Image (cartoon, rainbow over all chains, first blue to last red; front, top):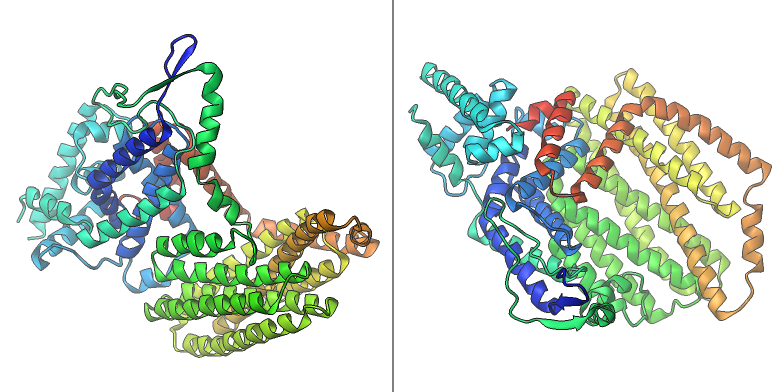
Length: 182
Length: 423
């Protein structure tokens, strides 16, 4: 609504509706894979990750449908995904039998990865898993979610410099482990 | 080998298949049509953050004075809005909107559900809806043969789909999920069997139709009981450790369920006959739970699992019976008010519902609930946290990052969360 004193600018709702939809699907096309990847590395189960990714976008739409403004869509999606993932893990809080039997990770099915690449992924994920928390966060946001330092800084609420330093050290640690493993 | 860039590249390659992406796109599209934007806001709602997005120039602008803006918006909402399908959710067979309910609304839900586990859960819900509709219609004397056949067919379809999906879950070796699905379906069936036969005994007019439906439900109950035996056989093949885990989980789940149902029951005012039924179910739920706990201590895991399942089932039956009866009474109430003025009998019944006997029962239950609460207090906390997250989800988007940070802090306190959290 415009701030003019006694006149209101009013777009026909179908026009605005189309615009919201268009923008929403643009965001989907752009971020769906990244959000899916984020969920997949958390849950390590393709089907569930897809469900959670879908839920993430559904919840985001519900937000939009209420007419609320999303300032920055990318962190918003990560945030919603994060909540959904937490809800999911809480519900599954008890040790699931499947998980135990598979040694903690049901980690199958790569789409376009060669076996060699898949082995690399598993290797680095294992290494990142073993790092201290402060490095782990940044490393996973960097490697898995492919976020830029600035974005990591805004998600973790630390300065870009701190991110750069920790990332550098973290990468060094990972590199060390990988080289020693050779 | 140590070139990290390669690793990063490989990880970034993980994504959705084009087909999967399109599937989810289509589902979201359906979802969006179902939930249109309610408040039209002339601002852009989605922003890309650091880019400086100003309000887009609208191609079409109608300038109306403030005086007329509101009626115009209301009219548009009425014409374009998705209110119809929301209304349809309350429809019963024979109503004008009923086809929208079963075909559009529930059809969308079916397409929107992904894993076979979620599908099976939805099937349980769907089968229950059909039975509940039959119950409501019967209570209003509106159940005729045609409607009954239709509901029966739909119930059969949902049950068949449940069987199929549960078998898929079982095939994936998810014993826990399979157990829970089977237990909740059996509970639903048994509860509705009870409600239906109660209605049939009270209402001679619709007795025939109900009996036919009841026969189907009973057949399914038999099936379900038969399945339980197979589950039992399946359990015996499992290792002792996995059985122990399963038993512990089942203990948790059934304990939570009992607490939940007791809270739920405490909120309702029920007719005396219903109250008696639910109390009976709850008593057997407690008995089964106690038995299960003893068996667990004695390391009889398979038996303990069965006991906890029984406890869960009884509690759920109590819940469904109470919920359905409450709903029928409410519906009946409004139905009767619109058709005649004679509500007296019902009102009397409601007054009777708090006899000294019942109060005593309630007291006993409260005592038990307290015990249960102590056992399950940690779980309760979790629930509270869940609620918090729910609220946060829809809260303001401005401090997204702050909240994310807070989440991380919380997560550190949460043992398992920590393991799972960052990768």
